[in-house]
Amino acid sequence: MAGIKPTIALDAMGGDQAPEIVIRGAAIAHERFPDVRFLAFGSGEILTKLVAKNKALSEAIELREAPTVISADAKPSQALRNGKESSMWRALEAVKEGEAQAAVSAGNTGALMAISKFLLRTPAGVDRPAMASILPTARGESVMLDLGANLECDANNLFQFAILGALFARASLAVEIPTVGLLNVGAEELKGSDEIKAAAAMLRELEGHLPLKFQGFIEGDDIIGGKVDVVVTDGFSGNVALKTAEGTARLLGHFMRRTFRSSPMAGIGYLFARSALRRLRDHLDPRKYNGAVFLGLNGIAIKGHGSSDAFGFANAVGVAVDMAKYGFLENVRAEFERLQTSELRSRSAPL
Image (tube, rainbow, N blue to C red; front, side, top):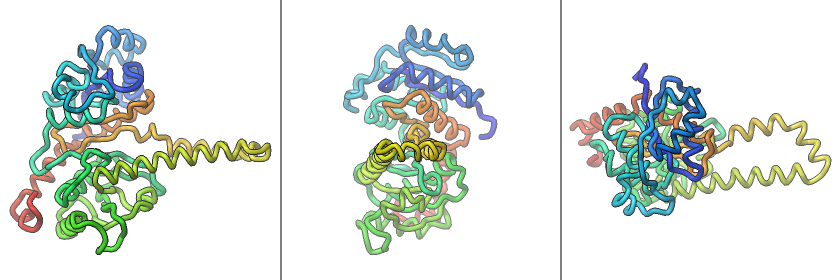
């Protein structure tokens, strides 16, 4: 898809600090990707004033009126019933209608998933969408999914997640043949539930026909160790692992600040280590990894963190741009169509 100039639909009213951080984030993203266009949905009066402050962005963004906003505490069912006039719904609708190649929202996660599934649907061969994100590791970066969209998964779901995660790693991490691991209670083949064992068997049987290299089972410490490019699990375990990793990073920062303030000598040590600590902070900055992706839909939907600032929102937009330019959706459709052929279907569980 080289040469594509994507249009990104923005839920300008979604997020704790919207719409200010959305427009400022779009301005930052426009500096990085001058060929990208934006459709911003929200209060036209408010958005017009914000965009007027950035002349360069004003030439690359079109404002669309959306009279309502889906609140942070709205239930997914409420969003589906009452959200058709909202900025979130209209941004996703722009993707469905082909006006935009991706939508980005920092709004209500449950509502975004529900509306995305309703409007965009799943392609043939994909039973459920999964939420994926990029995590920093000891070796660089890895993709992890599912992060909460599916609390219970069968073997076929995990098998499909492995393929979706591998294709996403290709697009976002530029890894030609990503390594994939199934998160388990141990690396031994006899451990784990029947579902995870069955998923592993499917991946081993079809490995030569898949866009990945299956590494078998991995444990929790292998996630941050970067043992594989793609970590596959159910939404319950994935969400717990993600929140634990985020909490550990905050705890590490707390301990380091407390240590360097503990004595005058420690403070002097900080002065000598300041540049190294700055590099560490930049590597672990959660804003760099903002932008969870709903994989397995007939459209690209990106969820930015609700408390994100403009820098973080711009990075979420960057994920959308990468997926659109890489042709992620086309690759997913082609891969799952190939897996529907009789030759492969006869060698695995029905897809």
